[in-house]
Amino acid sequence: MNRETYLKELQRYLGRLPKEDYENAMEYFTEYFDEAGPEKEADVIAELGTPKEAASEVLNALLASGQSGDGQLMVPGESQKEVETISGNGGAVDQRETKTQKSSVGRIILIAVLAILAAPVGIPIAIAAIVMLFSGIFILACAVASVLMVGCAGIISGILLLAEGIALFGSAINGALLVCGAALLSIGLGVLIITFSIWAGKQLTMLLIRLVTKLIHRKEG
Image (cartoon, rainbow, N blue to C red; front, side):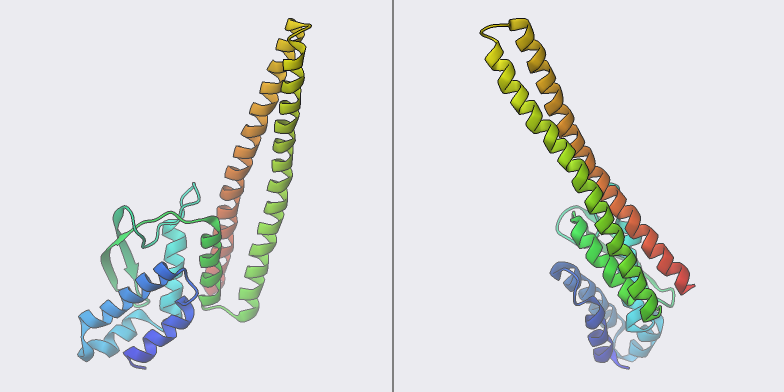
């Protein structure tokens, strides 16, 4: 295998990444070969391992070292600069100045799926891991949707109560104040429930992804 073949194989495994991540990953490997030179091409390939192994390490690194509690994934991007360590299969480590950017939960799930597919495990295990991942996400989505409905119901009820309370001001001020207070409480709780359910959904999704990827790593061992 030569440099051209190696990079083409990498493109197969990394090609479905978001455009910017894909370009940054391929740029890294291209520059790695450029810096080594044609005479050390074989050494670089032996150092990095197979294209599938190299792609798996890159994808796993994005998940393992990049996930944060607020649903962000630290990957090459367009904001704050940091130093990222990328290691090849043979243990070679190269520190490169990269950037960080926020990522949506959907993007993290995409990278998790690609990491599972690129992992050096059997196809049945990879399929089982993906099914497990999406089944868990579906269950979480249903739970979050249920809680969101409760929050929305609280807000709607609060708005109706608030309208009723305002209408009472002309006849019973004390009752109007009581109703308006209950309405504002209902609206506040509804907003709190919605905010918490969205936050909890993201956290549980990240936890699920970590559990599935850890399971894959154990299977690799």
